[in-house]
Image (cartoon, rainbow, N blue to C red; front, side, top):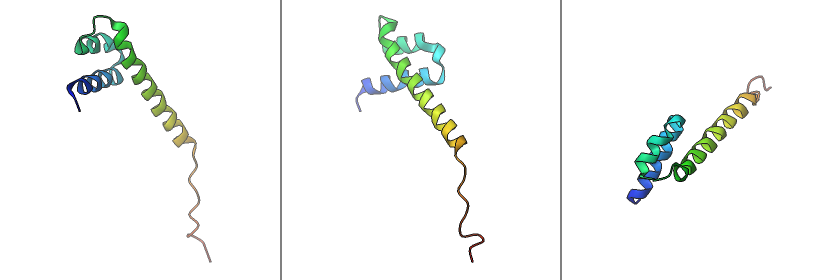
Length: 72
């Protein structure tokens, strides 16, 4: 991986853990315009939403009965 990829990962990770730190991520990437950094925010939001959806689905699933118990 090249150095730019590490910067991308650091910025996206920063925004995932603290979305209010968009300005810090902008500074990390040395973007002159925060709109460029906003892409990382969008990616981070998508990840957070997909994780929440997975949690909700997991909570809705009911465990299957253990068929080996009580089998004749």
